[in-house]
Amino acid sequence: MRRPTWPSLCMVGTRQGASVAVYGLVVAALVLAACAAVAEEPIATFSIVGYDPETGDLGVAVQSRFFAVGAVVPWAKANVGAIASQAYGNTTFGPRGLALLEEGVGVEAVLAELLADDPDRQRRQVGIVNAQGGAAAFTGQECMDWAGHVTGEDFTAQGNILVGEETVAAMAKAFRETEDILGERLMRAIEEGQVAGGDSRGVQSAAILIVREGGGYGGYNDVYCDLRVDDHEDPIGELRRIFNMWKGEALIYEGYRLTEEEKWEKAFDVGLRAVAMDPDKGEPRYHLGCYYSKAGMREEALSELRKAVELEPDLAPRAKLDPDFEPLYEDEEFLEITGE
Image (tube, rainbow, N blue to C red; front, side):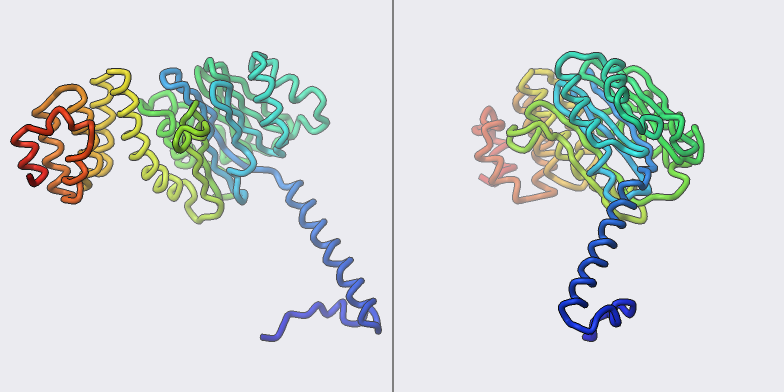
């Protein structure tokens, strides 16, 4: 394959070494110029930062006409707070702000300290929520229109280079009115923000980050949910698709957490919601059967297990070894369902 050439460089020098040297300098200059251009590009974005007082979850959902926005805007630390830094985003605001929140500094004071020594503060947009549900936000006067924010109990919604303020108003309304886990409230907020107008430049990337103490895989870290769509023609739609995959699993594990606390009715409700998300799959019904069995509800446990095995026969041998079904090991109906 013929390699592309740089015509302007072909006559730079008669010696090979000189040509290579000049080529290298030009490439370096181009790379630096590109980096500078990216650094100066505003993160035209709308985001919501939220807290769930029931579970202690903290998180951020964000959408932007900006590549890989999830790598720049959202920051969160379990039992501490969550921060979105956007517009001409200052990525030091995340770790610095979380460190201040962890020291017990209030959200308004954290915001003031972050902005105090920043010469570009009027180009910044920041939203902060702490682990007590306190919220604060700032939109600099030099952020590009439309730019603004709405704060409320347990959340702050903000955006810049938007079609209009209806975007942040729609996010706030969706967060307040959605009765579900924090992730769903955040997702609904950015979905409604997009419906209301969203980023005036279009769409490119979206992300959702949620932290919970011990919420990561195996309980080894606090990253409960970390999903990113870096470049897509419908980033919110794609984020919704993979979020629903995550949510189904999250509801199942939430159900087990609730059974450990003997919050049976809440566990059953969560289990039924997981089933509703995938009614043609046996796995969610299997786990709902486990919740009922742990609660000593024989008929309900066997009913769900039967439906689960009918949908996925491979679940039958698993049930025989599952300690959650131990109270039913000698039950005739259980033995019939599992193939004994």
